[in-house]
Figure 1 (cartoon, rainbow, N blue to C red):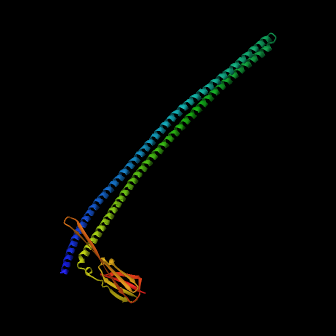
Figure 2 (cartoon, rainbow, N blue to C red):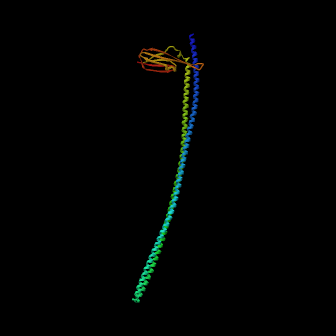
Figure 3 (tube, helix red, strand yellow):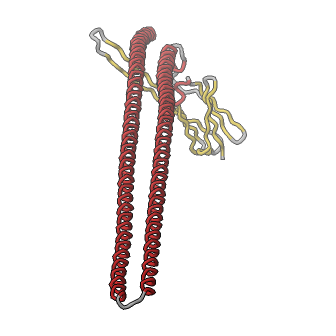
Length: 391
């Protein structure tokens, strides 16, 4: 009767254990479903955050490109304005040079005209002085001749006539010399004036040629700079576009890698939970069939070897950690702790938990002294084996 009641109690206990394990498994399945939902939500949030971050990076890159374009356009407009200013300055300098050259020509013409007038007046003054001197001489000679007429003879009169003729010749010679000097001065003035005009025209031509060449060089330089800046701007745009694509690709790869790692980690955690639960369930279900939970005393097998003792005990794998062996002197002490736990859910939803443990110990004497520091163990096919060296 007592055995039947114990069996009924064990069956009820096992049924309660089965129910609690079923409830635990269902709760674990719900937790797994919740974990799947949380994983999907987290994956969606990560994907959304990644896309938002990519859009922000793209907008930032577009803003930077637009800002660079505005700066390039401002620089181009500034260069164009400086080029127009340089052109206006060159035109003003050309006008100033033209006016200055014209004024110089006028000044030179007025200077040479003044020189010509001064020379002409000086020559006329010299001629007048010569004529005046000649007339004075003639008058003096006439006076002397008149004074000598009364005193001189016909020869003196002839001599006076000769002197008069000689004076006429001198006057004619002086007039010829004056006219020749005047013609020479006029020719020299015309030649010098023509040379100055020619030099001035050559100088104007050279200056105009220099100004045109300088202007052409400035235009070529400005055009080359604009072409270089346009090419650099295109290269910069291509580089920024390539960099943006590379960044987008790298971020996408990193995002996918993070998602794969999260998925793998959640999968491993779920599989681990499932395995542990299945293993725990199998252990619980097999407890009623396992003779380990029905033993009332430890019956290990002790074998004497060459320089050691071997102790073997049949133990389930999930209980092998609860077995302890110590060696002291010639005695072997083995201890087994067997634990039971139960959880029953009432109709009102409350849970009643119970747990108990049983400790079995046994001391086994040996013939030899044992080395307590050289104790090894191994587990194979449900048998836990200890190897204890002897002294």
